[in-house]
Image 1 (cartoon, helix red, strand yellow):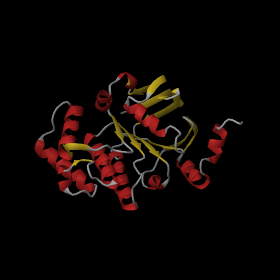
Image 2: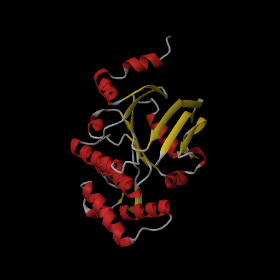
Image 3: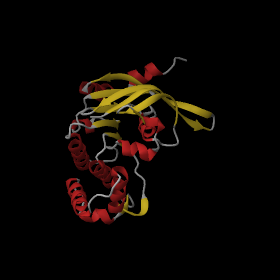
Image 4: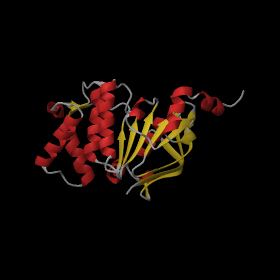
Length: 255
């Protein structure tokens, strides 16, 4: 059982002109077994929400709370958040030269579980995950994200998701830069993760195409640092047809 509760979250970033508020009171609850899609135009604060949950130092929380199963997430360090069961798949995964995928994955698994996985079963688990994501076993010997295509980077993120097995996955535009084949493979990986039934997923995206493969229970329209509207999967279809205009116009002060 898991529950991620975000209540009236306010977040700012430092700019040349001083602090700028990005999130302006976001309230959202993700129960286990639920998939929530956040959609919205560029600059609406979607990625800020993801990185604030994960603990990125660039973002300053100025108000509100984030709890996971009642525990105060905002009081945790980044690694404590990961051990508590939070996972972030980044929009732009970074390169880690000199660190192989296999070493990276095993080190991460050891840090989260508090003990190293048994080598024989771990190698089998890694190979099974890579195979399911259409990645060659030699992929594990490559340096993390170094020279990876966009599709390989995103598949690697999903391999981490499957192997680290968190309580709640925050997926920040996992579909960006993927062709249709890679999109299906990545979506299948997320659906395998969800199949346990006790996992929560927060899926951030611009487009509805990934929602054809990963079915959301709830859709939230994000505009100007707030949730402007909430609904079921049908809301995504409405956004596909009509765009965000009516929400962005409503959020823009008359002048």
